[in-house]
Image (cartoon, rainbow, N blue to C red; front, side):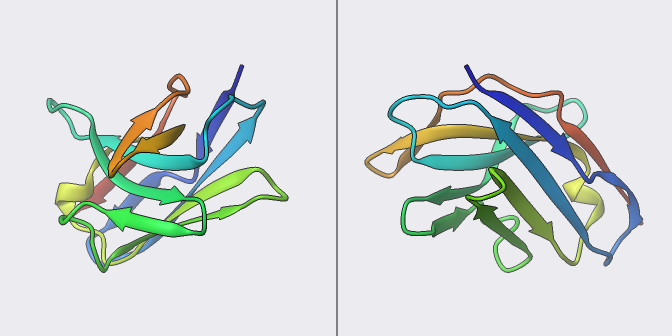
Length: 121
């Protein structure tokens, strides 16, 4: 069983930066990747960044060049560094543990409580 604890969200102005953290406790078999999702107000949850074995990373087009996902295996923590934030980045951010099948990421953990990011214009 895995527990996920996201933190680091807040209210910022457009152009500012935030770094989200996700502390992971426990393990799930056959997982070798992590991903950050976000859910904008009134919209569906969307995948924004993934990191896989060998530190292979991938990003949604909307955040490419602005967001950076990383992990610290010793601290069992996954990070999402967000620069040049825009009002469109507003939402609740969730991290997951999962795996890739081909090029598709599948979350295998449950969902944590998430952390709210609000970007004002």
